[in-house]
Length: 243
Image 1 (cartoon, helix red, strand yellow):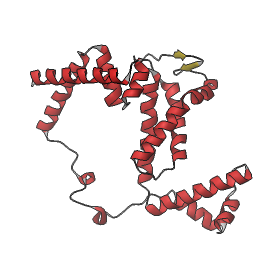
Image 2: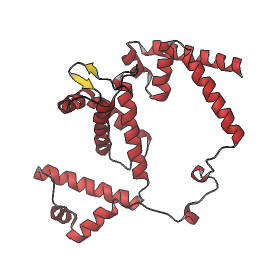
Image 3: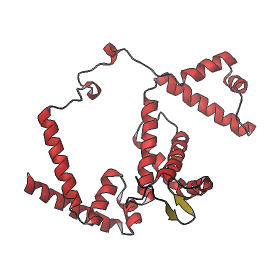
Image 4: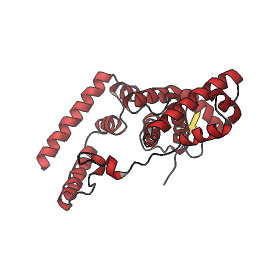
């Protein structure tokens, strides 16, 4: 696989990008990370603090900058997908914790943040324990419980209406029909004009809104909306003709 390097201003994206570009990368795209963090945080579980999501997003941004390959899509939508995916994965991981573990985690986070502001450094375990009015041993147990995954007995959590217990396997005819529809859809999208196909990819795959797509393609949101509608109308007509 051919790895590309993309130059944008003072930044270099790709496998061969230098480490000294990390600070510039974060400065240039930090608002993207914060905007995605607030968006994901507001639409999903709040088990993870917004600051934690931002940190996860910054790490994903750096990884995206190092792993980016030029395949006709600009860096921003690529990074958008990687950052959003990392944040969602973090929320899913946190959602597997019990309620008490999440409460303990929030307590520890608040106390640690307060002590860091007061001490201008990371607090020791003894200082954390003192702030919580417990001994060091109890603090260690509290810290451990904040990371413990809760495993509920299946007989108390099972429900016939819970999709999590549904059989994920599809029947052979459903699989064949889905595969055929996927093939037809892919072929029809490939036959669309390049800009229409790109708009659909950015909107449905990368989950960008019309304003974000307009910024990438240098178009107004209204124009992007027109292109999206025309592409969907064309796809619907092509799919009807082939069914």
